[in-house]
Length: 269
Ligand SMILES: [Zn+2]
Image (tube, rainbow, N blue to C red; front, top):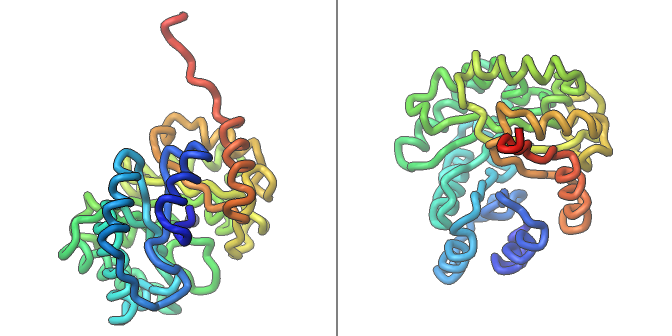
């Protein structure tokens, strides 16, 4: 959800769409410029969103795998902004680095440093695998998990478009089925914390991160039907990061709802 026109507007839009959870950027995701929240804004946000799970998403510029002072202080700043608003979950991309080993170490360091200072839940998002990006496989994410000290604060955010772009053919039910089983094995049970529900504009294994409208992309409708109804993950929050925000959100929400099967009432049997 956009917050660029103020939190009241965000809330109205949230209500209109009937969202049960949302994700926001706490600052302009394409700028290094620091942001300061006004105390009225903080009060408004906390009041409006007190009963709705809100996730923040780290902006695009900090590269945790690089781990420079600039990257880490930007990461810390966004955690601070999130906590000010009462948001206790932040989604991060691992970033990229040509030396993958060093990249994994730097990401884990960034998380460890953050968790020394802040009480926040961090969700590591899988990447599409473009060039030297880190975190396109569950194995890499598991290796970061291994190096994290306060493990209870770290989970994974599975992005369906990125899985597909990274070459995991989730259009095949058995692939999806095994993926969830495998994540329980390699990351630990209950370590999937959030789903980014996106179709893909690019082909399987393209490594190019382009999100698309649910059911209209290369992944397609049927896959989302079983993802949305998978009992192993259907108590989790899922957020759409589909294009044309504000225009196509309603269409995408409608599609998602049409794919959700009604809960079976056992009292009738
Ligand atoms: Zn995502």
